[in-house]
Image (cartoon, rainbow, N blue to C red; front, side, top):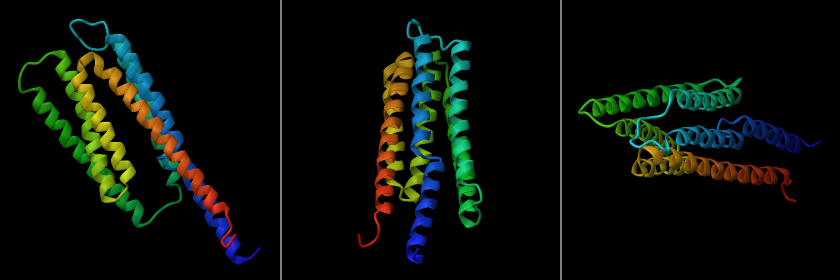
Length: 212
């Protein structure tokens, strides 16, 4: 085997490994889509007949947070696997970014708490504020981070999440669960499909020998 061909095969193998373990890999988006539809759907089924709205039951919330915990666990697993054996400046940058994003999210939560304690509101207001407000805050933080790295697909994804949350807020305390669940599920499925298509194109490009 020629040295150039051997180097090409090695690069392709490494790229395939990174794609399969990337914490933004299509399978991670697919799991997230199922979790979004199931978790929000369970709560919507629980609250859809509440007049007036009083909030999800304890059982619905247990299911909701258990599914969210599953989503977080898949991201941590994929991220940890993708970063195994990786060290140096890039890891330090990512840690600093994570700390900055955590601090920004904390500030957003404090702002939401200040708004919530400013006056007496209905249960629907509080649930809408913290659910949709959290989604918008997370989307804004991720969009800012992605813009810095010029990852425009991630920026578009984050902006879409914020728009879905905004529509959810308009839909009211009962409808927001359905809007967020269906909207996020559709968005994540589309993201997984785009990611799969791009990876297949990349695989085909690597497979074609130079000069062929």
